Length: 237
Image (cartoon, rainbow, N blue to C red; front, top):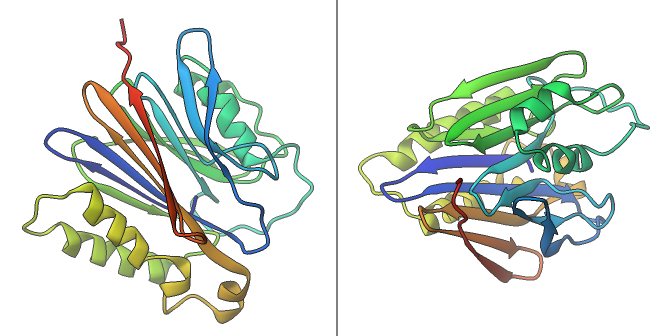
C-alpha cells in the first residue's frame, strides 16, 4: 500500500501496488470475495484488521490505498477504525466518490486512494483535517508513493526512473512488475536503516483490466508464490 502505479496500454489498464509492512505482521489472505447487491468485490484481506489496501469489482472499478496524504504525519493512535476498513466501506458503495465525500473521517488516520471508477481516474485524500479530490488524466501513466515511508528526495528519484522506464517501449505487465520489484523498500538506498530493519515489501498486487475480463494477481514476496484470480467483467448495463 506504499507504492502504486497506473498504466494505460493499447488494450488494458494496469494497476500495480507494493505493500510495505512490518515484518511481524500476519500474511494477507488472497483472494477474498464479497457479494454485493449488483456486483462482486475482490480483494486481498489483511488478517490483523480485516480490511484491505486493494479492491476491484467485476465491473472494473478499483481503489488502492496509500498511507498518508500530502506529507508525512505523526501517527497518534488509537484511531476509530483502520484505513483498510474505510476503503472497504467506500468501495461497497455504487458511487465511490460520493461515498468518500459523505464518509465521516473524524478520528481516521490520513490516507489517499487511487480510484478508477466509471472510466475516470481520481486521487482522493484525507489529510487528517480536510478531504481533497484530484482528477487525474486517465490517458497518462502515474506513480504514487506513500509519504509515511518515502520522503520527497526518494519520490523525486522514483519519478525520474519512472519517466526513463517509459521511454521508447511498449509497456507490458511483466515489465511493470519488475519496475516495482526494483523499488521494494529494502532496495531503496536512501531509506533509513532503522526503517529497513522494521519494514519489508511483503507483496506486490497487480490488476489488469481489459474490455471483457479482469486479471488479479497477488505476488507474495516473502514466500515467493503467486496467486491468480480471473474475473469475467460484467457489463455496466
